[in-house]
Length: 172
Image (cartoon, rainbow, N blue to C red; front, side, top):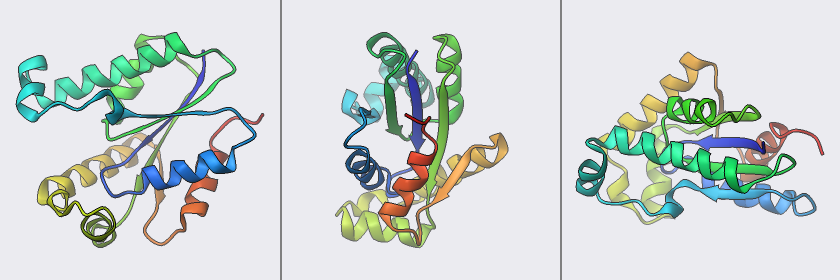
């Protein structure tokens, strides 16, 4: 089974920037970085039509990712999957598919930083909304309750966040 690091966090937490830096820092070490959204995210209406609810769609999509990783990668592979999925869906997917070598981490930041990133850096002001704030709080609370490591990206450089993520990977 491959080793899998699941990097979660709501929009604006810094996942994409940190993982780009991880990729650069690990240029001599093979690592596959997968983006949950690359599967194509349907509209809310389509998610509900396909799965019955948004939550159920996310659960099914998360399990699909874990199954794909389990099937496509070898035991010596390092795989990082980033996305906004509920950590319970990820751990349940790993258990269902027999994937034992994994870790979870949540990238998080304060709401002011997240809003500024979404509005100014990403030019996605529509994402700086109460629903995203609630989702961020949900993920943070889940991480705290389950003992999942939280990396606060509010005042850290992208390089420092990448170093924290690299520290979670098994040694060469």
